[in-house]
Image (cartoon, rainbow, N blue to C red; front, side, top):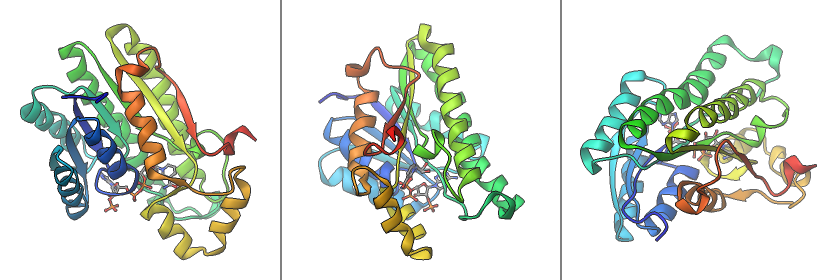
Length: 251
Ligand code: NAP
């Protein structure tokens, strides 16, 4: 019950890692706001949380829009009275292409969702946490936010950006009782990975071979780390970019 009664917001909560985090945090008795651009996925997560006895509401949100990010935080406060934890996890993969072949439109879309979206959420979450005297935030970066990866340079740039935002914001607000960390997963078994493997079938075996653990990660393995980072058990942890990658970035 590490998150008993905590009001927790999860973006990208309608699928993959976000949904897994919702289920783990519901188990820990958090009260959840599931934000996603995909209403069907978001509502399905709410149903799954309620089915296991948890509390959750869905908030339709496009994190790349300032008004939506501000409205999301307002809605959580209206629903639960405060915002204790936020998991800024919504993200997109973009097209796999080398740097010289990435289109400007893809660049703009990836940066808008993965980097600006995290910053917008941070901005309004931090404002609320300052008003109430503290909180904990976890951002989803990626192993591609720690090392270079092939055919994902803009995605990697967006995730390096998330790591940078996380560290700087952590330094700024550590004295105000707000902890801000990032998780950096390697390839995780979610619909995002499925989409990539469907386009490039050889990619899955290559990824497994490159990982010292010789497998993909599971969304629940990321979720457990997120729940811990959100909880008071991680009370002296801030500004960390935690690899959850089976040893991939240790090589
Ligand atoms: P996923 O299964 O595709 O889930 C992402 C969710 O975010 C989807 O429901 C998606 O909706 C939603 N979303 C997309 N754009 C949004 C926006 N503008 N506003 C609000 N919600 C939006 O992906 P995942 O694998 O769980 O990924 C979650 C996070 O982990 C992402 O930030 C990703 O970059 C990161 N990550 C993933 C992996 C991996 O291998 N899976 C590895 C490292 C990091 P739609 O489906 O409608 O787009």
